[in-house]
Amino acid sequence: MLNEIKIKELIRHGENATLEFKEAGRDSLPSSLFDTICAFLNAEGGIILLGVKDDGEVSGVHPDCVAKLKADLANLANNPQKLDPVFIIGATDYAIDGKIVIY
Image 1: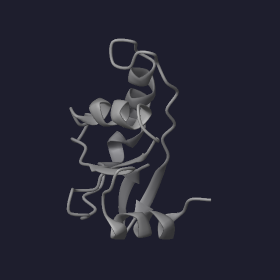
Image 2: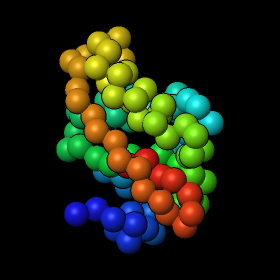
Image 3: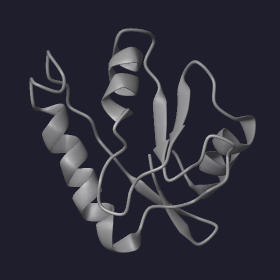
Image 4: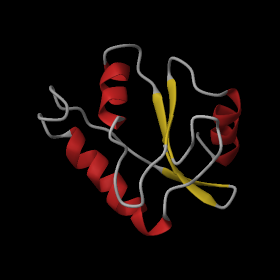
């Protein structure tokens, strides 16, 4: 089961072939998010942590936007103009050092 400690451990180990950090805008998903999702789907899969900078600093996702970003992710993943074939993507949010990270 994933929890704050395991998320911190992932962050501490840094990005690799199956782990990508992405910063999210206040109310928008990163423009390169679906490129990363496609790459993971075409390889061995992977984990994306929204709200984490490339250097591992937890920048967080704005608390008022968490539900919107998770809904946008689910909706866009079911849009064949973004992903073809479409893919069901789940997202869970975790509090890391007082900031929200979407897994």
